[in-house]
Length: 289
Image (tube, rainbow, N blue to C red; front, side, top):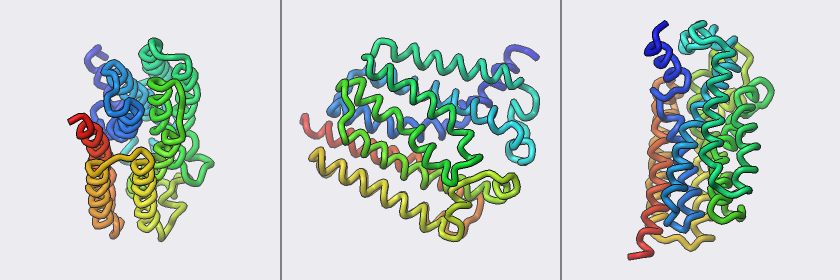
């Protein structure tokens, strides 16, 4: 196998060719970075957390495929993934994940001790998430913690403390993750039943659509409470209003539980996260004008 072919396999394994996962991880991280930085975070902080998001998401994808390598061979959509198909050895994949995690750790070395200490549970949560679907009824909630751990780290990096607002932002992200990953799970519902894997779509059953919308409502409600506590203005709430409109649009996509439409709703969550971030950034920008 040529070096170019090996590189292509690594791109597929880390999902760098499908950036939706990176974006769903990046937006809540940037919420935390901007609020902790009072709307004006140092650009080296922005760069560290952005690149760190890419590296950790890539490492998480490798671990996910390693953990699911025996399940993926039974699903048409996943049976050609690099590890399952035998194109990348499991041990090689673990070395790749370790290298990516090490690179992410090296990125945060210039930051304070609290941030360095938080990186330990961050890695443990990210690495253990793929295994939770074996025993946890709603692994999507665990995913929300993994995808939101950049929030308390962003506050620690800039304030050397983690105020209550950081944990509320993390809670909002947990509900958002349950919402969008339930949409994703609705696509794989039949395969998960066959393989005996837990998912929120199976847990909620016939109430899956209602649960998704309730989680969107919880996300936006918590974010509105954060905005009120921080005395954010109309630009922030305009962002939430746009996000609410996007959530309502998702209802029209998932209410019939069609696979293609549910997957489209999942992908579209990028714009919900972006709308919330735009509201945060514009509100802080308005304050200095």
